[in-house]
Length: 140
Image 1 (cartoon, helix red, strand yellow):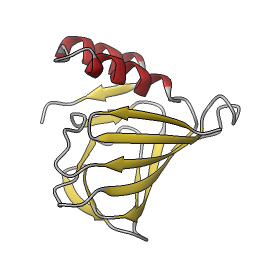
Image 2 (cartoon, rainbow, N blue to C red):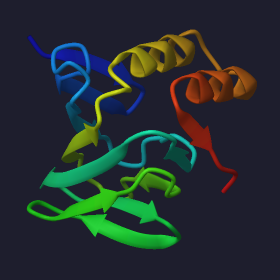
Image 3 (cartoon, rainbow, N blue to C red):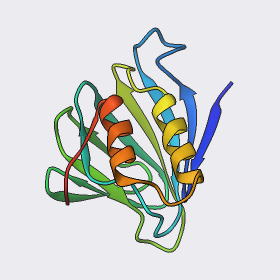
Image 4 (cartoon, rainbow, N blue to C red):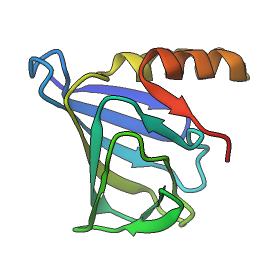
């Protein structure tokens, strides 16, 4: 059964995780509210990410280039490549994300949701959570 995790204006619906794919992949549908606050630019140490647009338009900044992902469009983000994303439109944007191999899982998102839900998040704590889960934040 899918697991849904909400973090402010971000909603993730995990369809598959490292736990039910024996580490093959993580797959989730991501809905981003207009002008929602998103994670700082970062890169992944040990997985690649593919993103496929389902509804609305998300702007990804991948390796210094802006890439708009609209329905039917996709982007591939290799491990080690700095990226971030935002929704600067007036409508929610939805995409499907697939991470390979599956090493992240929903645990990272649960921890971030708990931190955000507790009030103003401590940037040092956020960085610690990111690093522990294999996401390396990069100053904008």
